[in-house]
Length: 138
Image 1 (tube, rainbow, N blue to C red):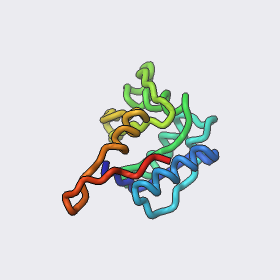
Image 2 (cartoon, one colour):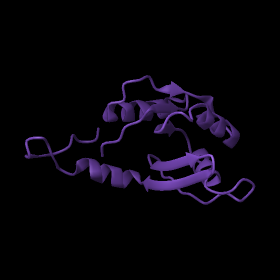
Image 3 (cartoon, helix red, strand yellow):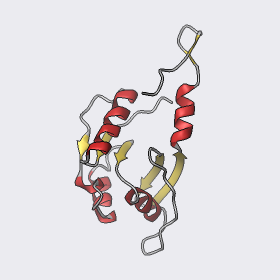
């Protein structure tokens, strides 16, 4: 899928760190995965907004956290302040791409884990033009 991240930030909890490390390895991310309490289960939307603001100089940030927090936070980021959050359903292992700017946020895509597994298993062509099968998902 040719995905690259400028920064990967994870909840300090074990499962999130494992997921973040797996994604880092699969995407060729070379830096250290940062841990942040802003993604812990007890975190608030305010915590996440501060985290995003602290790294506003980065274009592609992967945050790895927990539901229902991430679904609620995503829904809140997509509507004007003070409005009821949008209802977003993120299954365990989902990826959501969000564009965050000063003027607001836009949901660009959501990938369900079933779709990600399917895409990962599709044969791809290497530089030689020969078809090769992607590595199986562990």
